Image (cartoon, rainbow, N blue to C red; front, side, top):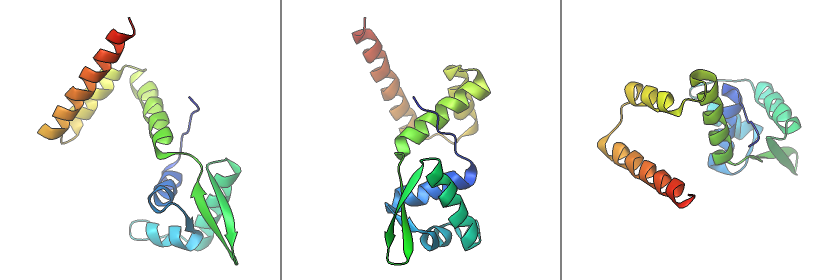
Length: 129
């Protein structure tokens, strides 16, 4: 799996693009503005860098560039979680899950869903034998 480590601003921009499908620099700037007021040029520069890295692409619509993500949300999520597990817990998934369960408010429904996922994974491993 290719490693996709995104900085906070890059990830925030990707969330805007994933949610909207595509967006202009101005659209991204406005979407980030409530919690992260940034200059138009800052957003434009970051999108240009992200395009150079292959994370986004653009098309021209009149006088503006319209950007879209080239990386699927799931691919980035998996890569970043895997990287986090490796860096923080030396790849020990049990330790990572323990930290998450201890530090996050987990509902009964979420626990039920997690148990179901664990049972499915156990079944996959049994089927591979």
